[in-house]
Length: 389
Ligand SMILES: *Cc1c(COP(=O)(O)O)cnc(C)c1O
Image (cartoon, rainbow, N blue to C red; front, side, top):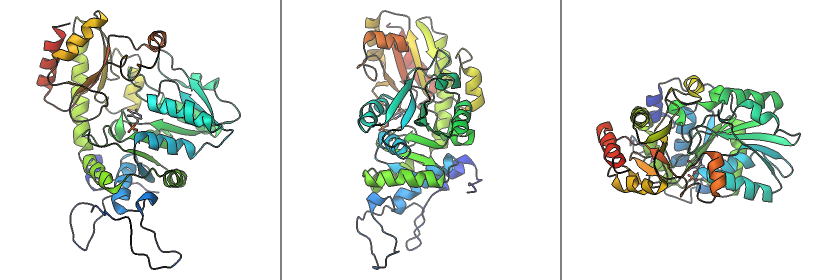
């Protein structure tokens, strides 16, 4: 399929949009109906929200597909629903999937609990100090392996996966490659162009961008998405129309928001790196990042996610969190507002101290979702709070 050649910001606003000519509004209408006219003929199109056939849903899905240079897409009730339908579109009982060990916690639990329960083998691959490179996958692939699932940049250490390398590895072995592109967004990275088969999003984060919605998306080639859509329909995971409308509205400013996230993210990372109370900053856009060269190769910008290890006693971390006024201590990420969290007591709380240490998630590691506020206010806020540490 030939893709929309218009600029990215133009596609954010116009791609996928559905114009109802009876009223002529400039926005895709919210078709709040669960029953639609049906003429009784066998081939009549069925309008039904769970079937993902309502234009309010397909407009959001087609917009995301266009931004990722994909043929087609589906929108789901959560990012995890997107990951589940993508995985189950490829895997049957007896098959195996190779999965990056430090994927998002929910995805990890989906794999090791539900996929295994369904008789699908899950082989976890631990990324090395230089992120996940192709060599790590070699030992994990078995004859039953059907898919490889990765996430880049990773949470919370912002390590990268060599996307072109993994895609080629999969292609050579007939494996379906799936990547979670939530942190980068298609503004910063388009994995399908690097050879990936399916892209998964927690659209709850940057794609919607306003921390007021839980939703997900899967995009890829038409026949792959047809299989994903079947799972979405059968498991009842399609995004309701009111939410799809909100998502489409959020997407219109994705280009604008991401350029601000990229600018503020880099500036905050640079500021933190120069601060005496900071031991280490993880941000792919910094020259000190171990995979900075790879980041420059496969990313166009480095996003708003930054993690920082403080040089202080763990009990001082709370002082910093309490001293912040612009950054809000909260879980989740990718909204216009700046958030801060402590992975050791949030996303990684279920792990033992040794497991956390092995992963590099220390008690003084903080994860920042840098928002689109004025940079001076963000730096002032951090400066004041760091003085308390
Ligand atoms: C939040 C998140 C998910 C899960 O998405 P939900 O919308 O919470 O279901 C998956 N992957 C990444 C990287 C995430 O940040």
